[in-house]
Length: 327
Image: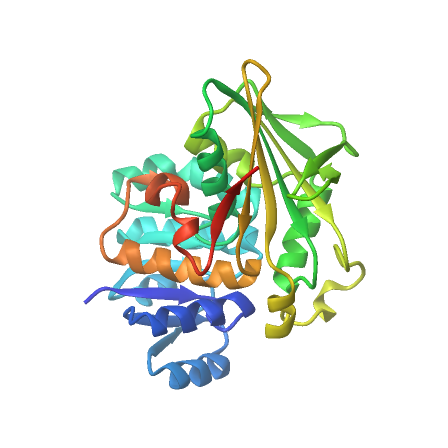
C-alpha cells in the first residue's frame, strides 16, 4: 500500500498536519532530519518514520519506498522544495507542500515539463494562503463577466510561527512584483491601496506573494496585485531564530484568518469576496492533510497544479468551518 510521507513532520505545521492525517486514517510515514523528535511523534501516532537530510540524493531515494505522495512541511522551502520535487519526479511520487513562497512556485514552473513526462504532480501551496486565496479568487471571478484584474490582500495579525516569519520577511524584502499583461513585472516599493476586509477599507501595502503565479495559473486573469494589512505584532524584527515554534491553541482561536479578493471587470465593476474561517495555521494543517489524502486516493493531475485547479474553487469551503462571503 502506498502511503503519504510528511517531511518536516516534527515542525510546527508538520506536526499538526501529521495529527490531522493520522486522525483521518491516512496511511502515513513521518520523515525529517531529527530522529529523536520523529521517534516521539511516530510513537504517539502509531506510525513509522524515516530519517534523512536533503544533501544526499541517494539517501533520499532509499527513503521513498512505499511512498505515493510526499507532503513537504520543512521550510524555508527555498532550501527544501527543489531537492524533494526532483526526488518525487525520479520516483513517480506526487509532490505537495505548504509553502507560501514565490520560489517554490517558480521551481514548479521550471520542473513542469519533467513532472508531466513522469506523470507526477507538483502541488505547491496545498494548504494555507495559496489554497485559500486561490479558491477565493476563483469564487469571485465566477461571479463576474469579463474580469480583467484581481487584487488580493491578507490580514496579518497575531503571532507568526518561526517558519512563517522567515518566509514573510523574504516576501517583503525581495522587491515588489505584480502581474501585468500576463507577465511578472517589478513595481515600486511602498505602494499602498485601501482594501475592505468586510468592515472598513484599510491601508494595505503591496508585496510579492506566490498567488501572482498560482492565481494567474488557475484564472488566466492578466492583471494581479497582492497586498498585506498588518496589525498586532505584525512582522517580527531581529533574530528570528529566537521566536517560538508558533502560536498556541488559544492564540489560534483568537485570530481567525482574514483576507479579501477584489475582481475588476472590463466595465469597471468591482466584486469582493472574503472568507470566514479558522486560524491560518489550523486551516493549513487540515487542508494539507486533506489534500494529501485525496491525492493518495487518486485525485491528481500532471505537472504543476494549484489547489483550486485540482480540487475546484469549493476546496477551501470543505475545510473546517470555512465559508465564503460575497460583499
